Image (cartoon, rainbow, N blue to C red; front, top):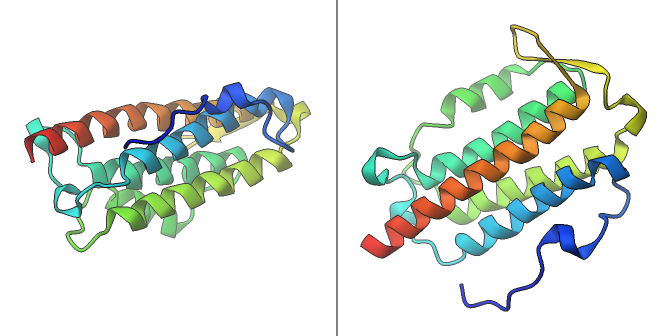
Length: 171
């Protein structure tokens, strides 16, 4: 992790093509991508599914963050989840011993890049329009879904960092 520190994503200016009101979403997601890549650079896959003190495994966080972005951005498009998305959701917490951290990090990074492309296509005039969450159709807005995807991802990045540090220090 000995890498020259650069400024956080939000301090580097606007993300090209992303509407002004969605810049915080893009900044948070891209920051998460950078931090996950950094924290996981030298991570030993033997620890991927360990749960120190009963906390969620690093593998779970990586799968969950990608899944949350996928699901919330699907709802943002005013579409229901597919059966494949439900299957992914059910499998997020399942340990997959043959998993590789690098593959999970790559899948997460790809999901962030996909989300940024979707943000670029988002019409700012639609941000307060109604959207619905889940099968219960909990009312929210397009903006609410996009911002929650970013903040929820950031929350899990913090948890991932703590878990990585616990595992590396005790390993």
